[in-house]
Amino acid sequence: MALSEIRVGQSESIPLAVIRRHARAPELAKVVPELCGVVWSSVRARGMKGGRHVAVFSNGTIRVSTETSPSKVEVGVEMFDSISDEGEVIRSATPAGRTASVTHLGPYQQLGTAHRAILDWCATHHLQLAGQSWEIYGHWEDGWNADPSKIRTDVFYQLAAVDC
Image (cartoon, rainbow, N blue to C red; front, side, top):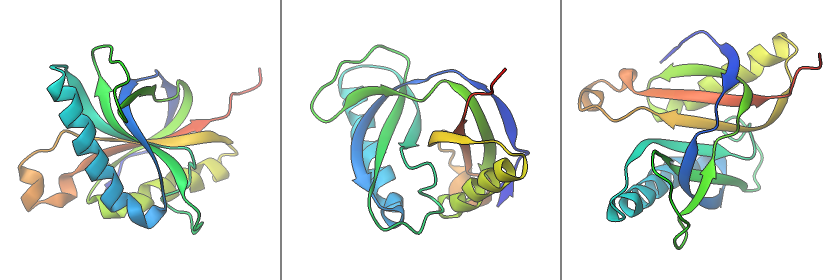
C-alpha cells in the first residue's frame, strides 16, 4: 500500500447519482460494491453517462471508527448528465470547499490507513474537519486483478473554512 502526499486545496462539488444507506464500518466492504453496481445499472438503463464510483460518508471517520452505530453513506456514480430521482437512486453531490486529500494505492481493505493518515496529518497541522469524507474509486483496470497494489482510490475530507 502506498500513499501520496497529503494535499490541501479547494474541491469542486461533483454531481452524483447515489443510493443512501446506513452502514457500520465492517459492512462497507459489502455495501459499497453492491450499491455501486445498482446505481451503475440504473444509470446505464437510462442511457446516461456516468463516471467513477464514489462513496460519501456523513461520519467522516467511519473507516477508522470503533463506533458501532450505523452512519449514513451515499454510494454511487459521478454524473456527467443531469439525472432525476428514480426509486432509491437519487441526485446528490460531493461537498465543495476546502479539503485535505490523499491518493491511496492498494487494496480497498487498506483504505483505513489513508483515512488515518489524513486525520493524523490534520491534527498535527491544526486543521479542523468539517464533517463529510468521501472516496473516489479509480476506473477498474484488468491489471489490478493480478496486482492489487495499483488500485487507486482518492480520499477526501471536508475541512472547516479558514477565518480571514
